[in-house]
Image (cartoon, rainbow, N blue to C red; front, side, top):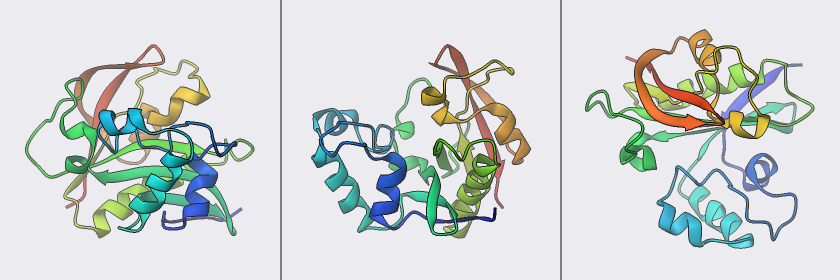
Amino acid sequence: MVIEVRPAEVFEDVRTLVGPKRADASVCWCLSYRIPSTINNKMRGQERGEFVRNLLADGPLGVLAYDGDEPVGWAAVAPRADTTFARNRKIPHVDDLPVWSVWCIRVRPGHRGKGISHALIEGAVDFARDRGAPAIEAYPLDNQGAKVDQTMAYAGIRKNFEAAGFTWAADTTSVLAGHPRILMRRDLS
């Protein structure tokens, strides 16, 4: 299997990874950290997908991993200033550098355990670097080897980011699925 990571530009492929199984379902669409909660909480069903389609008109929303032509993984990545992490009280800013954030890693069932999350993290790093990011941050779970519920593992886990050259930058007060989240960073200069 050869995994290729590309900018997330094709709506149908993005929908495959972050959209609902039923068109009328109100699932995340990976909008929770991308847009203000007042807007996010008001949208329902198909309105969420149309919102993502409109966002894609302005450019990629992250990166997708492909096995051949099949989309098998997703990573959300954007300038931190364009996300709710810019104002998040639980995740600190360690300095004023205009960093980018990677906050969601998702691999489709049936494709897990094949290194796709590692490829997605590296793809997110390349995506940010290619767009001038001086550094990239992530806010993974510090699960210390404990099992993590797959639905809550979207933030990633510390060891995967360490393997990609990220280092601890700060503790946070954010907890997800019973595990503390930490701020990790990788310099891109």
